[in-house]
Length: 307
Image 1 (cartoon, rainbow, N blue to C red):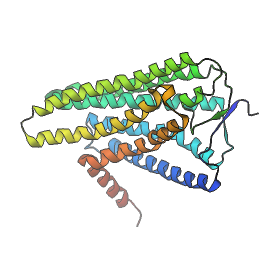
Image 2 (cartoon, rainbow, N blue to C red):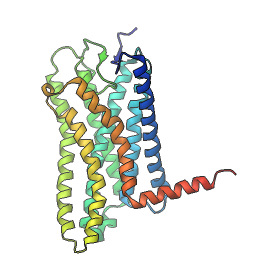
Image 3 (tube, helix red, strand yellow):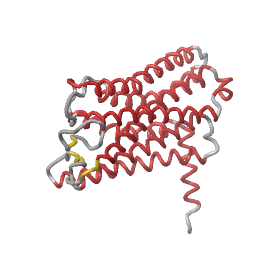
Image 4 (cartoon, helix red, strand yellow):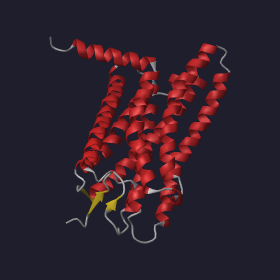
């Protein structure tokens, strides 16, 4: 019955600790859902947030919403009942969507850096270059690339025989599942590293190049207020980029000999909970237009409440 199922290693053997963790993770997940849904809602409904930057911000929130939903509900079930198992097919599906959405997230952050570059370097041609059609194509391309790389990696991993069924993690991520495989996995580790370079290193280098050009353009702005506004707009995106790429790079680009399962699981908690939560908080707290749109949306919702 259980030969075609995996089981996740519990965080603690103490039932009370598991219950406290369940409440903590549930609250974090609900906060993630509410905050990202709020950003997505105001971007879709507020007529003042029509620029490409806000279109990409809404797309990022939608991705984060799907990304956490792929991971957290199954995780909550496993935390609540440590004996819960997951079928191999569902584990494979979780791995595919987790890697695909995470990859799309990284590609989209690179697209957002390009958007900021065009806005600051070519402000007079911004609307003509960053058309709504191009923005949609860039988001679709991010999803397509993430899905294509994830499909290749997931198929390769689940073609392996497995010697153990206990995953030392809270989700079916590639590194912990690979550790369960029998036989030589050097080819799979090489493919994993190559996908990590394609998803993390290349977009990160493109982001660095974009921001080098942005910095050069900003320094040529004569107005001190103009320079301050430009750097303020870009700093939110840079904060998200450093957190996302830093955590993922530690898991996927670090040599296997230098990593441990417990370290990977702790880092994964950051990009499963903290990063998706910080994205909307950073953008909404640091962006005047988003704050005002959220305020208007709350007032409209309260105005429609029955007396």
